[in-house]
Image 1 (cartoon, rainbow, N blue to C red):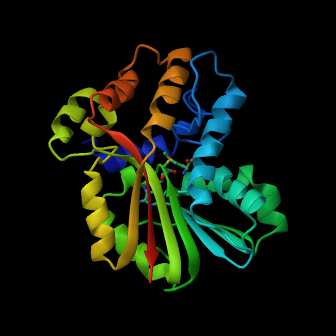
Image 2 (image 1 turned 135 degrees about the vertical axis):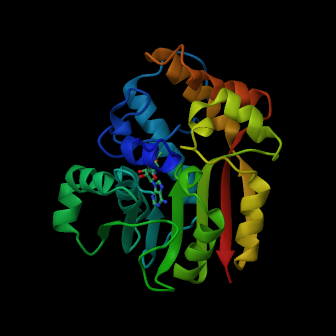
Image 3 (image 1 turned 60 degrees about the horizontal axis):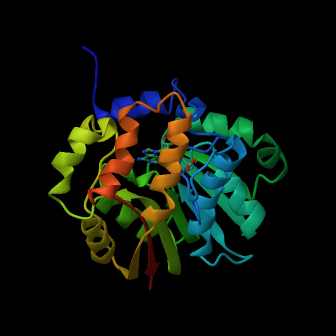
Length: 268
Ligand SMILES: C[S@@+](CC[C@H](N)C(=O)[O-])C[C@H]1O[C@@H](n2cnc3c(N)ncnc32)[C@H](O)[C@@H]1O
């Protein structure tokens, strides 16, 4: 019997199917992107790649990374974002974690130079956000970019992130949530990956509560949808997915059913 659960579909997407190879994405990134001042018009592949790097920069700027910091990325994908962190923000080390061994293998190939020449500063590992394979109080900063929509228990992730952060450490997470619980049924009708369980979309308030319950303080929630959805939809329009359900992300945003968020939280 075939297993059609969200988890098995995610395993295929990030495994043999290699989502990063779809024209929706580029530059080995797999995220919707961040456009500071989006203006309609033709988007080049380089601009699309830059939008995805910019989503990383938006997150990393909120972490105030210093030269002695040891940083963890959860759901690093092909780790081009983790490499950007090392290159542009200069921490002592970046650790990239991903559930998919195929993604970690791709990350190792794509970043072969860093893996070979800076093995103490650029460390990749397979493992789950729900059970982080690290000792407690190891990291100064922890972040996650467009991966938390796949974490099946955000309370467990909040708890694990809190455990591995040093006192005074900071967490930053960016991805999509719904502003209010009743929207989930309507979102299922519009978005195939939500309906199938690939994306587990929760109310933003429940993640904020998870973070507070697990001991985080100064939890801040920013809506960044105006910098994400229109740019992403314009790019979709240029691809062979222009007539697909994927255009419903922008519709859902325009109807107030979904938004893209950047959440930061501190460990006392
Ligand atoms: C949409 S991709 C984003 C990758 C990367 N952050 C980027 O922006 O290019 C989501 C990634 O999260 C990973 N992932 C999904 N569930 C996970 C989990 N429970 N723990 C760790 N990683 C997970 C997937 O394997 C995938 O590589």
